[in-house]
Amino acid sequence: MNWSIHLFGEQLRILNILDVLIVIFLVYELYRLLRGSLAFYILLGLIVVYLSFLLVRYLQMPLLTDIFQSLLSVGVIALIIIFQPEIRRFLLMIGKNTPFAQDGFLKKFPWQFFRRLKETDEEEHVIQYILTAVENMAHSYTGALIVITNTYKLRFDTTTGVPIDGHVSARLLESIFKKGSPLHDGAVIIANNRIVAAKVVLPVSENPDLPPRIGLRHRSAVGATEHSDALAIVVSEERGTISYAKAGKLYQNVTLEELREQLYLKIVEKQ
Image (cartoon, rainbow, N blue to C red; front, side):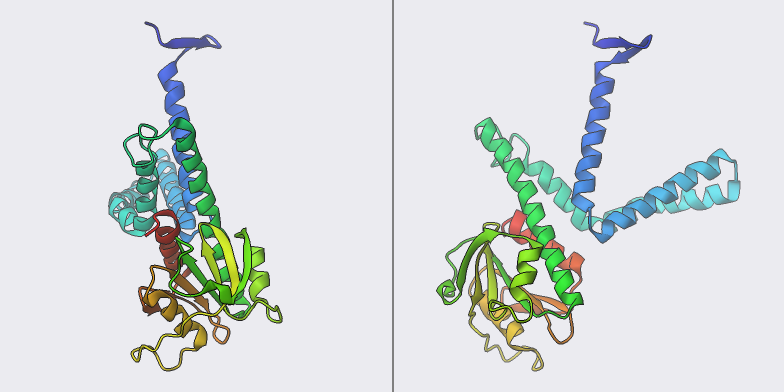
């Protein structure tokens, strides 16, 4: 069977078209995975280095060619180290969408499989909204306390707050914690990709090993995670720094990339 077509007098195989479509799909998924992160700009830098290597090799410049070739030969190991979280997320996304995965289409109906693809995209948007809000509030020295959990059944009482039940967005989070807002005190609870409540009073940790200079928000974040699997994010009003609490431990002055990894583990992998 001849799996080819003729276009402008040239023979074009169906597999060639499929090859191009697969590459386009992989490039798009890679872009969607890295967009807005520091790794995206690192990848752009690596592309520039590779294009420069092709240029100097074409111009027959032996010294620069050897230098770029040495950089690229070591670059494979460097890529694995630099992009370890992104590679892990990319492989996880592929693995979750295979036919043999727990949510694969061999175990569920096709429409349920495609619904899971839509949910994964929604979860990535939620992560980006939270990161954007946290970054903006850190720059403006706006204090914030956000608790992310996978279930409504928390070990602390959410009835102390104000019910929201709204979609997660950066603007909504920033408006809740804006100075002068009636909801800025207390914590925002996010569960199942929705803002459940705001102004929630959390239990304060009595752990004597915590740094003595931390404030009530940080102690409440630790207290919320001591007896639950929640992830608590804190923005310091005094220093504009970002911290998170997990399993009763406090991690201070973290970067947005470190926070992105924790959010991915909590929201996408649901750990």
